[in-house]
Structures are given as structure tokens and as C-alpha cells.
Image 1 (cartoon, helix red, strand yellow):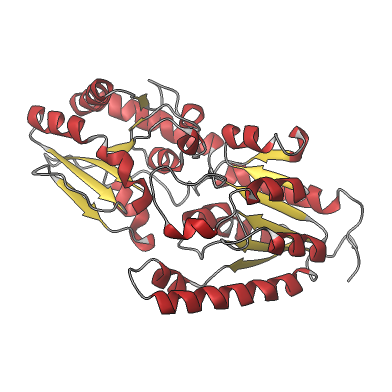
Image 2: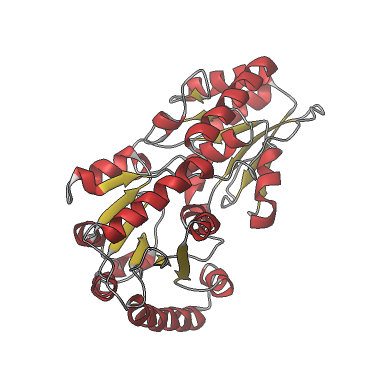
Length: 371
């Protein structure tokens, strides 16, 4: 490859831009990479409209047809991979069966970077998916062994990956936000204080564990409301809870309406593999947080400085209660949290790192073969 030739990278992602992993670990980096001479092609498993159909109830025939078409498209990606210098694989190429597509992509392109940001090597402990019977949970290990380089979202995932490849073959790139887009908004205190959470329906079980603390806080304070964005609705009795659908177009504004952001978790292998992205969103928007000290949360939050930790119900009540009563503490945590995200969890801090590792992985074995 001549010095003037562009490096061509094929990104294989599981979801279209609406999927948080695809959006924040691939799509948002595309303008930066292209501005620095990388030709980027992103190939989600299914397009946006089809992805929405897959998550709707019923329609088994339509879903089977979508999955079949997706498999055929992945065969096309295998053929296409020979035109690229690097395949960058996010999570997996296809959700079912062994990693034969990943092996074929590597053979065609010659170089494979594997990126994962969750404990995808486990069957979920909180969400029952009947399709999991068709999944190969050993696939993650196999792809790690196959990859020329491995990118992970946290130290815990780095420790997992290091069982199957050299430590110097792994790079931690946290899931980040564009802090020019995720900016704090002025909070107009109109009497009601909003305590919020954002996520997917799969995370709803962690919220149920806060019901006791929520009841206690609502008895103590009469100006609270809870807003849960993207959660699967569940019984909350007479608590002032709004279950709000997630919308990409309003995501930033919806979170900006929070006065306090929550991230409760159990403590197990699945949650230790999470990358704390809720906290990064909250903190980037100048929202003080209360979270469980589990997994990447412990790296993102400096307890008492850029957020608060809570484990037991009593600690959740105490931490949230202190933030409710102390606007000065909310401001301090918000300011420190924003600074921390700008410094360590922003697109500006991560994009040069991603560019370097893609370029290094492509050239490590020598010059890129001519086409």
C-alpha cells in the first residue's frame, strides 16, 4: 500500500445505528476515522426497520424471513471482506451457531479486530431468551483466539480476554460519548425533582430491587418523580413512576431532564462485564449519580467526588436522600463528573486511540497486500 493509499476497514456490527453498542462504539467514530484517511464501511446484521420488527411481539414467520435474509447478507460480507485491509468485528457476525462466519471474514481480509463491551460469553442471568438455545456461548473465546487484536470496554473484560490471548494483544477502549453533543443543560427547579434511569428492557430487573428504597424516599419527600426510559414496565403500586419509551432523537434531552441518575446492579459475572455507559451519559450531561460499585462503575466513578455508591437498601436511601437535600452536593458531583468524562470517556479522548490501534493492527504483519 502506498503512503497515499487509504486504509480500508469493514466494520461488522450486530445492530443498526439505533443499537447502543453499534452507535457508540462504531458509528460515532466514523467521521473522525474518515477525516484521518480511513475508508469506513459499516455493515449491520439487519437494517433499522427490520431490527424494529425483530423486537416486536409475534410475527414469527416475518422474523424467520428477516433472519434468513441477514444470513445471506453476511455471506455477501464474506465475499466483500477481500476488498478490505481490516475487518473490525463488534460482538459477533451472526447470533447463532459457531464462529464460522468470523473465520471466513478473517481468511478473506487477512486481519481481524474483535471488539466486545459486555459479558456476551454468558447466558443472561436476568433475561430469558428462548433463542439462546441456538447460541454458542463459547464463540467469544474462539474469536478472541482468532483475532489479530482484541478491543474491550473494561478491565473486567480485559481480564477475561487475557485467558485466551496475550495481554499486549488487548486494548481497553471504554464506550464513550461526544461531549460536544452530550452537554449539561440548565436545570430549572420547579418543585419536582426527577430521579431517572435509561437502558433497555433487559435491565428492568435491576430497577425492581430499588422499589423499597423508592417507597421510603417518597414517604420522606413529597416532590419526587421517577422516570425510567427504555425499561419494561412493571408493577410499582402508587409510586410516581413514568415508564418512557427510548427515542434516539430525544435521548440527550430526555436524560437532561434528570436531576439524579441511577445505575443499580446486582454483583455477578454478568454485571461485572458491563461497561457503565449509563454513568458516562449521566455524568457527561452534568447529572449527579448513584450507582452500584460493580464492574466498570468502580473505574468511572470516584466515590464522593464524581458520584456516590450504594449497595444495601439503606445505602441507596441515604445516598439519594443526601442528594435530594443538598443541591450544593448535586452541583459538585455534576461538575466533577462532567470533567471526568471529558478527560477520559469522551469521543475526543478515544478516537485517536482507536485510529492508532486499527492502523497498527493492519500494518503489524507488514505492508498491506495489494489488491
